[in-house]
Length: 131
Length: 128
Length: 248
Image (cartoon, rainbow over all chains, first blue to last red):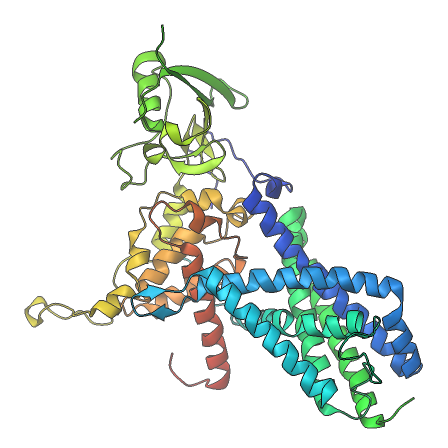
């Protein structure tokens, strides 16, 4: 957009701290920064796998038991679950399902997908470990 | 009115599609992976309260290797894509190009390394 | 005097006189059924005729009176004083737009974007009126009717931090209107509109903050329109990859 030369204007732009202005914005920023933990966990996991390739299975297993790794992973799990919950809610907001004359609400999609998550998690454990 | 040209950002559309898929993966598959490797195994909880350990992929278990690949690759892609975008929103908008370059580089290297390690194990079978 | 009084803090800015904006307080007699616009009109009529702001229909259909009221983008004609805590209310110009004077902001950027998305039915071939009207079923109408409620008040742009950070972003209202026409069964202008919404500064800048849909006074839900447009863009891109010669 070209600068308006018909009259003087006060241009205002957002400061980097714009997200502290209200609760919606702050919760949005928290939601986006869960991605940092998802990415970091993935990179750390790949590093752990490399210990196995360059060393031995025992190296990988003791890496998993390392308290620092367990601690970080637990934090990452909390943020991953927050990502999952907000993702399910957003799915409900952008893809409501029509049932008769009414549409599903986002919180319903959240509940439904959380149940789906539990089912998929159990299936994963059964398929990969128990079988 | 000046003539404007608009170009569909097809590549970015596809990258966004993959990002969305990664979001599904991170939401549905990552929690159970973290549970298995950071809670169940270190604390000997179900399903690792017996003899088994998270080397389920070492037995040449293709499904295990695939599960790890899809979950970690998808989560890595989604996480980096979104984090790079989040950084542009806290004052780093002018470094957007550099952030994208670094981000995609990390994704590329990470996924190649991941695939390499997994293929090695799958082919080696019962490596110690 | 036992009359109820409200205090209105308004941003004043006169470009030829002031280096930067400042707040001015006015005391206004308070009635339970007053809206912020009533207070501003009282100030202009009885206290300070220089106060400058936009308004027109005073009933929430014209989209002229957007402002930041106690930190939230709202229509002044639709904001009852009794809905706010206490008797002091702060009125500022809508964020993310340049200020011309007091509460009046420069809308040119939005106007350009509105024209860019061509908010009218585009036909490959117009049928003459003798052939009758274009028929549309109730289901076809439902696909886009929500998005046709937009009154161009720009509260969504005031609420959108992405637009606040990057003026080139097409933004909520323009995308919702583009989507309204894309989804209209009478419209045949996808080829014209898709490049506008699917370029980099189109929908791809949106990161689902969602504040646009929260502040919209007409229930348009621009966030939904943007996401659906993104999905259209992604599926189009994949289709063009798989079927280079195929149609849309």
